[in-house]
Length: 237
Image 1 (tube, one colour):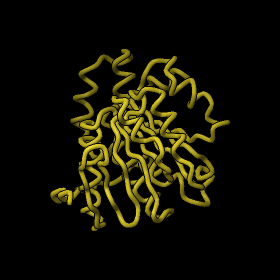
Image 2 (cartoon, one colour):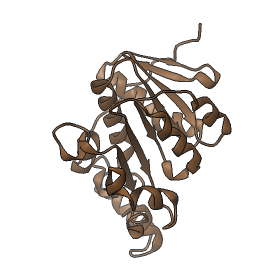
Image 3 (cartoon, one colour):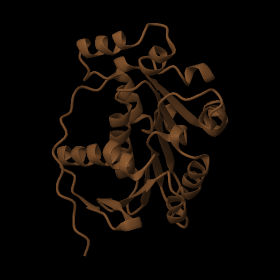
Image 4 (cartoon, one colour):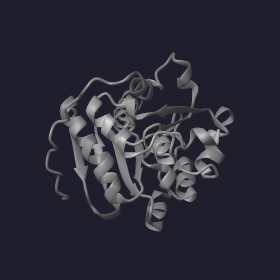
């Protein structure tokens, strides 16, 4: 029998910004945004999009499905565990949602209620191989712009359950990146909802911290636009 993961510490929630609330609730009927099949949250570093994405994905998958499988993918398995799994388990503790975290080679997964969430690192061919044959009701791709396009395509192809939705977040990348070319520029035809984040959308950051970040990069510079305003993808549209 695989060992259960030691219980995580409890997540300390702070007030959510309006942009975070949009990301958490876009799928709720009768909101018009619920008609979309995809959501992409892009923008600056430290903008709070990851936590909002995790909270929204958990609520959506648990409220809309029972007994289904879901995909959780990160740039690497290590990055996924650090950026998504760790805060996710802390959030589950805070919500008092029972879960089981099982780590057993290529079958690493988290069981929450009757649903199962399988973990994949995007940097190995083994992840794509392991994903083949899975029938999923949804997927969450963290730092999706760093994934090979083949894994994004494989992930989408696995989501064949009626009502499935794809959640992605990413930081800015270049204007010819496939996330822009194949998704953002084709948002209407692909039924994609895009939510852009700036650093000020993270209400947990104090004014002093934001000012320190702003001092680090000259206003108007490429780095300021990228890291503070998250405008790398805005330039693509």
